[in-house]
Image (cartoon, rainbow, N blue to C red; front, side):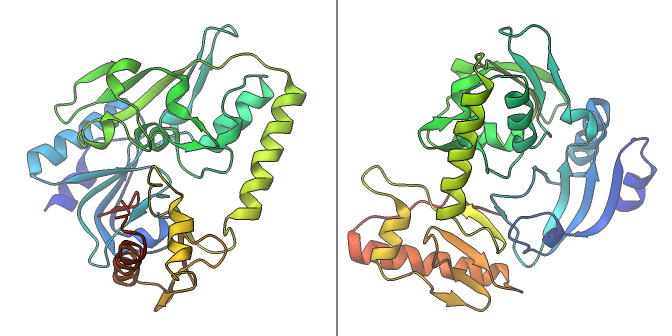
Amino acid sequence: MHIKEMRGLKIRGRVVAQQSMKELTSLKIGGQAYLYVVPEDLEDLKTVISFCKDSGLSFLVIGNGSKLLIRDEGFKGVVVKLGSSFTRIKMENKGDGITVGAGLSLSTLIDFASEKELSGLELLVGIPGTVGGAIARNASAFGQDLGQRVIWVRALDNSTGDFTVRKEDILFGYRTSVFMDKKDWIITEVKLALPAGRKEEIISRLREARDKKMRSQPISLPSAGCVFKNPPSCSAGLLIQRAGCSGMRIGDAQVSTHHANFIVNKGNAAARDVIRLIDMVRERVKASSGITLEPELEII
């Protein structure tokens, strides 16, 4: 009944029943979503959220699925991915900031900024998520995080209320923000302050950061990026390596030998394999160092 009703709704975007989540996550793992919806614009999004609320269905908003593990049983609700009108960039005068749609990929934003000689994002190059996901998790690399550049964020709640959250209320921290707790708040747009810079210097920083990541991270196999947050005292990857977990494997899920804080999909890994591997790594690190690693990978 829900599928029939949803297909009958007047939305401009796509509606897909029983969508495989393997196609929508960077790990290439996961069962089916009951419904997959790509709302084209804000009115579409409000319609979808109202439908979920009225039908008693859970919803999950995803970006590029780069920090997400969907269980093998799938998601018995509505998976929402923001459509094309949420990928726009608006810039008036240099120095006044730029407004960016939450569905835009972070890599596209970084390319745009470098072309316009705007700095402050270079060290985030190579992070595969969308702007919305990067805001929610306060994406960071080499001491630079996206939250440093935020002026405000526009969001929608499950009552379809559209509101603005100022930077001081977003509570940015290490790989977190208020949006990690407020799961019913959907980021739609963000305004960023990006200072002017020299194009040659921006390109140089981009190239250096990209080269570092290519040397240190496994990029030839599907992964979800770093699985665990770094504890205050040490890098999670080093703790995992010291605990003898590098190369540890369950099915086609393997702790990367290139970077121990990555779990890669060697072919046809199941979510249960990844979850067992996460548990084993945490146990071994706890036994060897006394430190309990905190996952940053979200398991649905």
